[in-house]
Image (cartoon, rainbow, N blue to C red; front, side, top):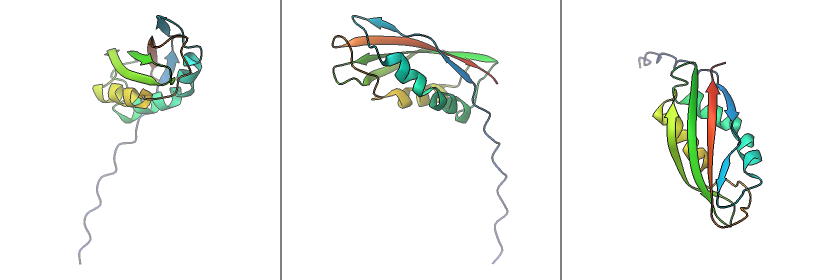
Length: 121
């Protein structure tokens, strides 16, 4: 039996960009652990971008908003704006944050908005 021709190797994914997480802003309360929780997943965020088309230019930004209720998880995660990254990368970051534990809010619910800055390495 003839062996199938080898498929061309997929293009190697680009290196993840540098990820800078701006301090989040809070509405109607505070989530003291949020910044630390977000910083913890910055590698995953960079991977999302790298595996979904990389940056479309030298720098990119993503603005994200979510609610934190008493159980301390990111709910209703929404991408408010994205520049310099693919829509797929933005969706990947949103999925990564969905139901992520971010610490308990000072009141229920607290709105959290934060900006991610990306820079090509």
